[in-house]
Length: 77
Image (cartoon, rainbow, N blue to C red):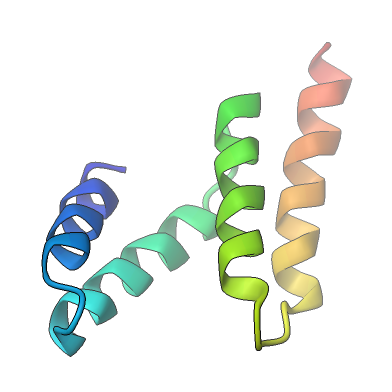
């Protein structure tokens, strides 16, 4: 998460840098692939997917990872 926060802050400060944007996208992709440890992480994933959904196709795998998080957290109670 810290890698993502650093990349996001740098990208927001200089939005016209392809290198910074690529770093942010890579960090987001890594976070999206990790199992969400709590509901706030799942909320972040859904928010991130909502942000990137405009003008592109969200893969069934991306949706499946978030659903797996929700199902695991619901089963945990």
